[in-house]
Image: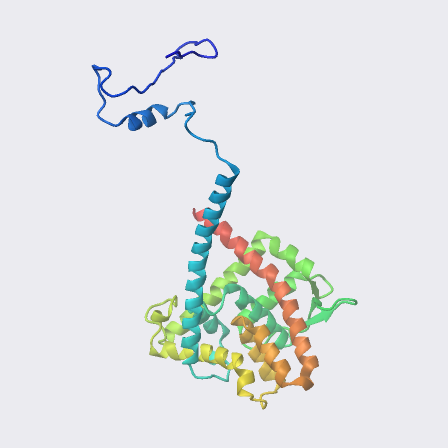
Length: 335
């Protein structure tokens, strides 16, 4: 056995020679109880030695590794997709058992619907904000405007303060008005810059938290909750389940509207209220398609709704982005 180094050893450097001999050739004074492979693996730890018996990776090896990884990840995603599909099927089956509800649910209290919707995973913070913006439009407080050469609403004009007795509509109106310039018209760029300020983002986030808290407080005082929070269906009492059925019953009614063919519901005011809840429940586009089919003579009104929805969604994008950014900052501070 010949062993050598490619360069002189310096300081505390040394060379270890390790070899394997046929069993029985020698009678060593020191014997390790483990197998030769175990001792060998331990000796290689921390070493820059490369085992000549180890073959380098080939292109085919890499291909098989990638394919194997893809199969594993595909299986994981497939399982999650299957679980989501089962969950949606259960929700659809559960929704089919609820009777249709044709009026504004929960006494028209949007905060109660918001608290219930969050607990039941029927709405989100983002859809709630969008519903609030749209309600200001339906109340005649905001008027979307088209700029020349553009297909969608490009600005919002402030007409009058909402006097419907809902302090949160008034608060949101004041917030948006503060973002507008002296001309009384809110451009999307103005709202984006306004919401980027941390103070304004916190104001909006606090407003949203207050809406949710007020909704839960109303439910609790009305004997609808077993405790003080609405986080899941099990938190609801029998009276709370009635409130839940109103919200989900309206969702079912709006989704099945074309099947019911209730053409008598054509009042603009009622449809404006319906669209607010359709936005809250995330089904606005499906509802508009049904209205388009049932009321071909009101095509211009339907198209106005669609343009209005696109405009409010764009404005709501800046609002919710500010809330999400503020919450991330608060979570980072707590961490």
